[in-house]
Length: 225
Ligand SMILES: Nc1ncnc2c1ncn2[C@@H]1O[C@H](COP(=O)(O)OP(=O)(O)OP(=O)(O)O)[C@@H](O)[C@H]1O
Image (spheres, rainbow, N blue to C red):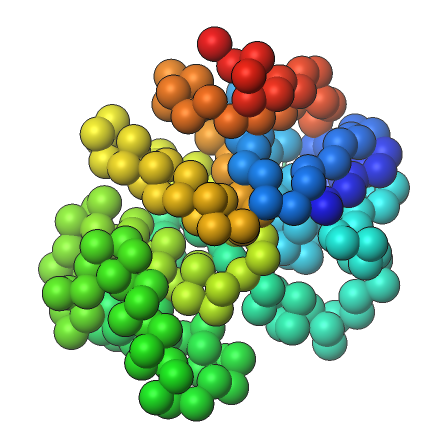
């Protein structure tokens, strides 16, 4: 269970990106975070990844307060979270295999186990045949799938994705969102920031709507028409 309790985030510029945000996401649920540009979607996900800290309020996951995690504990925290970005942030001079392997290297997983898990993750996103290639020989959609494989390879309990389909054509976007749905089906909690309303409606998952940093609507999956 993720719990945001009266969370506000004011950047050093003085801008309040999130205001008194409270909501819960049960373990294993998939939810979209939507809202206009600047509504605070990325900020919300950054708080979960401990890329930013709240100015007020508290965030917890499975009863553990994120405020208690110090700087030295951040790498360990991030190992249980998979993060996907719009600009996938792949290492272009490393192979697809090496990119996906990276979180496992950082996590100290032994080599044979790494190879097994990397191949399982690549198979999941349909890219096993590409493991020796460099990312820039792949299409945009394929590169995004490498980013997703990297995010799930360490079997995170929480997957967060910030506009993961922003650069993709509609058909590819549907496929990528479908992949997130599959991860949810195997028990991962999935939070996706997106402003692609037609695609969100199609997915029929919970939708949390932000407006100028405030939560203005929270629709259960069955309310999404
Ligand atoms: N590091 C920062 N310093 C100052 N202000 C910031 C910072 N990051 C974000 N903001 C501001 O906070 C507000 C929320 O930004 P955020 O990126 O969370 O919105 P968003 O909903 O993800 O927008 P978009 O859809 O355009 O990515 C915006 O007004 C933005 O300019």
